[in-house]
Image (cartoon, rainbow over all chains, first blue to last red; front, side, top):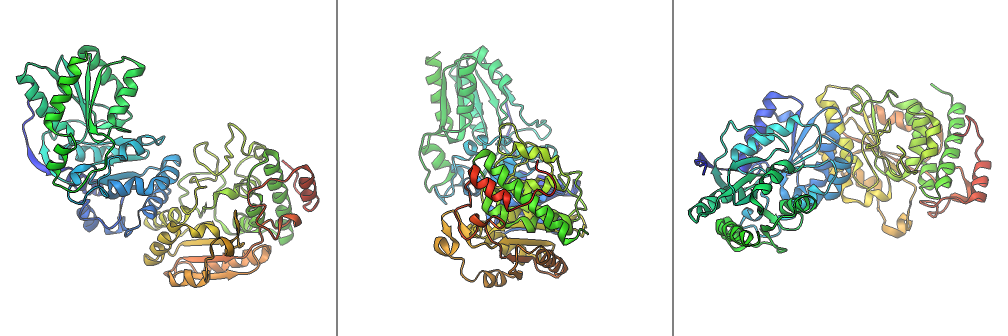
Length: 317
Length: 281
């Protein structure tokens, strides 16, 4: 199977911060707002280079979302930065009314999503954000998988007119997406060709899916690995084309089953090609304190979980 | 500049529009709408530098945001009667397929509306953001917002108030429709705001209290006063004392017409108190 060499080890949030700085240089309409988490969001480079276009709003996320909506009126392209939890559940009504319903060109950039936030525990480990955001009409939802893809996604959403939720994370993870791989909103990427099973993964689970595919290959199972970075709008074509061949699918994500990528995929398949599916996702639980690796293992989001789910779905073909 | 008599004549017609729109659907919010007629007419006829050939970005125009979106009838009427869209379209208020949604919205593309409002407390943040965009663009134009007094019970208002004062957003003029009433009763009984003037002052705003919020000349004067205070390092807030239901005697002195529609008889009574000056829609 096709190999993806590890190019380095970096947090996805740094991909956001580096791209934001580039955008600041390229486009003077790009502005950024942050709710007292500038360092955590890696927004310091932008802040230092473009102080007039950086708005420190303090610990007031609701106001940040409203201000971002207001800044679009007058032609600005605002990027908001805070943790995923405070970008979604804390400000859902502000995002719904002032941004999504009002079709404002705001880029909601959310770090520390999911269990890999780690030791801070469940108060900060949002696992419901994709569901909340994908339910909002007009909202695009993107969850890139490594540093390079997060950087490419950040650059791409600046050119897209409309509200976007961009979700990324805290820990250092392998960089494996080539720097020059094109990023197109709404277009999945077939990373590995296979014939027995389709594995669709997003965010931090993409690398784990690739590692699982290697283990499966040793067992004689040929897995097709597809990276869905844009959960909404979903690339239906790439998924349907794959399951027509493999006849079964595993979805993998750092999110609750409810509202996640897996549900979007099952919703598609039940309307088109009913297909056996297994979910690698958190099953109706809050997280807890621990290291990212410990948590991913305990909550069933490890490489072995992708392997087990694949073996289970193959039996249901 | 229109004469006060001309503006008052327009006010009479706007009041007819409001009660007719709400009556036609047996739904809507007449009380606050009637209380803010003078504010809207003064703002759109005498204060705003605006272009009725609507453009969302509003570059080089003054902007207005209605934060208490439920008083949409007065806004729609004044927008129509100042040329943003045909007066006949007021008949579609709250009907299926209308651009005149129950609460203001942008999805249907109604000229004059730049953000959805209805869920309360969000407009001051939006106004602050738009005011900052004007500063970044090097514009000298102003941003106006209107809020209900009950709306100030929402925490986001005070987040925005802290931000705007702390960052010298001095091209922003907020007005509070200080009628002392909300859905459940008198504001003092539901949840008192205490010393409201003192609160805004302590938050760092330049505060103007206007007792005569339903006196056309007084409203024009206070808006001009507010305008003259911009650009001096502080955002400006007007506490505009109005009468909920103003201009329709049986709707005044009570909170009960906040969100209730008049029946046929009550409509006739309300219309008899406000002459048809410019032609009903």
